[in-house]
Length: 344
Image 1: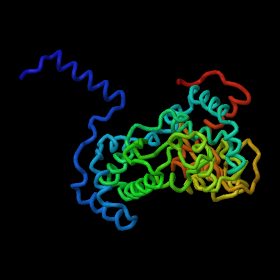
Image 2: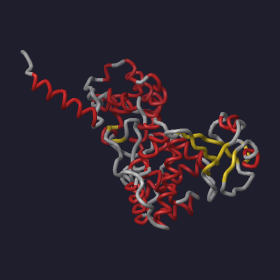
Image 3: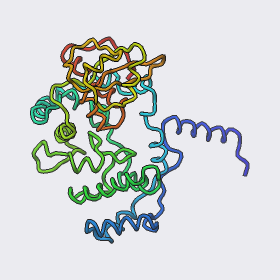
Image 4: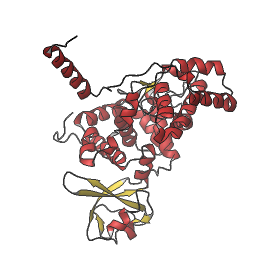
């Protein structure tokens, strides 16, 4: 059968629009993963190590669809972008305004989280804002599909995602939830703060006192859980996160090469051609980060709390976007809006 040119053109237009909208070219696959040796080996381990019923797990996995689109998505993360392209994704007027609104609506719970865990309200608000735009975008992928795909079809990080799949099944059992009912990101992160399964089990808290740790639906639990996560990773109450810096000469490059984990006192760091306008205690441990601009770079001195943000997402771009968003939200709430400078 010969396809008419106009019909062929229509197909290409639809395909182009599909790609532009970010939809994967390869849909989920309804193959029975219980026929795979690697999946059966995993099931056997879950039965042995955690006393799951084998038939129960077989029923769960028979419903799983592996999804090549997940592999496509995880292979092109936003964190691979340079800073000047990454920042505008999160530092938008809309996200700032919505952050102020979220803070006002949840001020009592945010203050209680600050008093309990020592984490400033604007930081908690910014994390939830970056992760899910304050709970609006919690993810469309069934977590079982995502984690099964990544555990068995993504060799680069198969060990990590197999462990997360294990944690997810334990979590679903603990919370008495159908594992096939939960949706999240392409990497299996869940809820308003996008916790992976191991973090959910370890750091989620029942902050609203209803007897359940529910970061999927409870904003209050999400607030408390983010604060608990940061406190558990050694967030220092009321200490700085980062400060813009200027560099001169070549000595700063040796500091830069040491990475983002703070290791050198500020007083010593400033002897290496690095300067900051803000006055901070010279005994604070610091590191130096470099961010790529459209032309050249910008530099920041990072403190312990900046490093703690990177424990949430191991990217200095993520940490800086979250920090700058937090500062814009705080300024907007207490001072007022700037002249619009970014697209929504």
